[in-house]
Length: 388
Length: 132
Image (cartoon, rainbow over the protein chains, first blue to last red):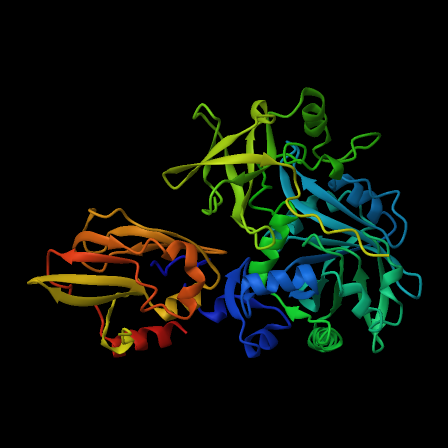
């Protein structure tokens, strides 16, 4: 067996001094988490095991430290106009409490990042916008925004990432258990809504969002409060079976949910429409960076598209495997793939030539061996409707 | 009789080797260590070589996959594959409890002496503790 690759769990980690640490780092190590380098941070990839953590999230709830995600705050009278200019999603009509998913694109329509933008209001009625960006893209996005901010002198941008922590609580029991934790009951939140409340008199941003296909919350707290809040949630959820979960389970969960991951389904060479994220673009009556390119794709049709595949057999297809038509022609590649713990079979997402979008079957070249694969609708897994 | 891990030789890449003589020839049984199985966690797939294939020392003969990662398997010995454990890929869970007996992967008729690079149990234990 090889032991050298950085995403190989047997791999030797680099020196801890090379990486940033989240405010929960000491807790993870004390809990026996396996720590791996990820996007400049050392992050827990798993505690007990990826499959057990995955199943806990699908049936009870799991806690994820997602403090490595970037958090950028925007203040000022024209913050909404600025964000509207740099995002594919309309921002100017948002009301306090709303959260939206969108993309930051370059002029060619390539995706610089996919983000969540929240419009928040403090108890003293101060309003601001918060952008949650991918960890690996934080520096790039800060640099990208700087020259554009110059056109909006009343807007200030502050990087809150290292001053705060972010915790995701995901699973069918998440909301029920969290009811008693905050001064305002989060079950009143609609999906993709957020408010600022407190937990033992300390402010916390609570959003009904997530990245696992489950119902749940994402919390943003001050860095110094992170461990207290994390432990409070775990304690409150102990009887319900809450567990801490690492990035390994987060990846299998988001794959089953058919959600794109930057660097895999999304990058600067792909536009949101090609990536199957047209819902995250508002093209009507707006001017934003990349609009001309996206309008052209919308009008002329995309040349590539994202599909879901079910490889037959047990062998998972992994990122980079070539996707072939039934005639044996290479028509694309796998962007994410692995075993689905919930379905018990391998699943894969792929970007392929749009001419083949409706084909009834495909083949995948898994490191030299060809495996049949059937197209399937995304997501691979959809949570059952909540019991009333 | 159960195989005793402390009597086996180990490759740096976590394969174990058990050499036995039968009828004047030397045969090596090869698997992966309990340490490797534990580190990989949640195994989902294993690819075995064909019987009759001739392997060089260090040659990749198959793959083991966990939920997250694909790890190539390397032959710690030189020789011809005379048997493969065909029940193993469908029962990878058993490796968690039984990496050294049920967990054998292939049997090779040796064409050369074992390489000096193979470690004894104590040296391998030291490597594992340093890998943490």
